[in-house]
Length: 344
Image 1 (cartoon, helix red, strand yellow):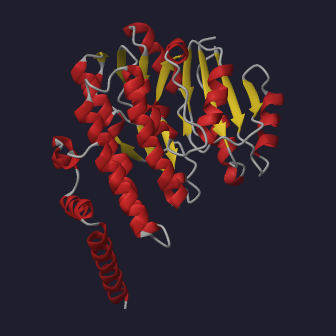
Image 2 (image 1 turned 60 degrees about the horizontal axis):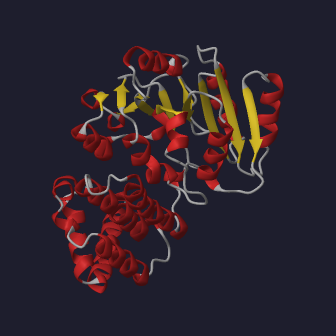
Image 3 (image 1 turned 60 degrees about the vertical axis):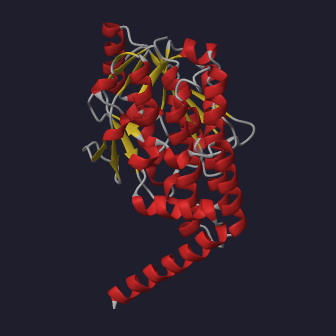
């Protein structure tokens, strides 16, 4: 078996999301592959759809029904353990791919000797094969080739999403690259582990992966629990770097990545989007950030990449949670007031 495509599924029946995804996988211009669809205790009929596709395509689709809801990480782990392919690819159940994607990536691997191959991603808000906005942070040609120190640094900082790449199953199993379960942002947590355990990466400049944006997407819903999951994903990044032995070599890049995911993104999601906000949450978030990396504000990547207003607010929060909290609330209230005035 050449390729196993793992699809974690949870409540994707509505709006033809799941069927559009599966149809795109069945249309791959490739013969030697399997689709492993893992239902994570869906409650909306997704499993019925999967069983129907499995019955109609027994040579291509295998369905695994998880006995316990473990989020996408747990579903992916079940798929990894069941996979038979030399290569593994992941796809979210509300996204889809171009017909040539996996064939072209496998051909690139065969001709170059790469053990990881990736392409570009484009964002769309309708079911279409017309390319939408291309997300350029999913790789670049300078990262292609044998992965030396500089290329690995680049992958930590701008490695893109796991779903636009294929990986050797043997490496995943040997390095035990299993995802954290029962949290969101499992890809963020494990991205470095997948990227840095490869030895040779090839990037293809084609937007073959269609990333579907809709109101049910994880990125469009926020809660305290999701903020906490993002924080846990940051902790996993550091644990994995130490487990796999690349923490010291890439400490500066990991410090910035942790600060961005664990602290910056969480803080500026929590404050405007979670109701009600609690000062104690901000205090504990800041405390843990400073315990892990007390000097993170002087990190060169942080200085260069975080916008000035966020840096000003973060500096304030690190000095006084109360001052930050009051200032932010007043600032946010003032901006909302100005928006209301502008609409009149």
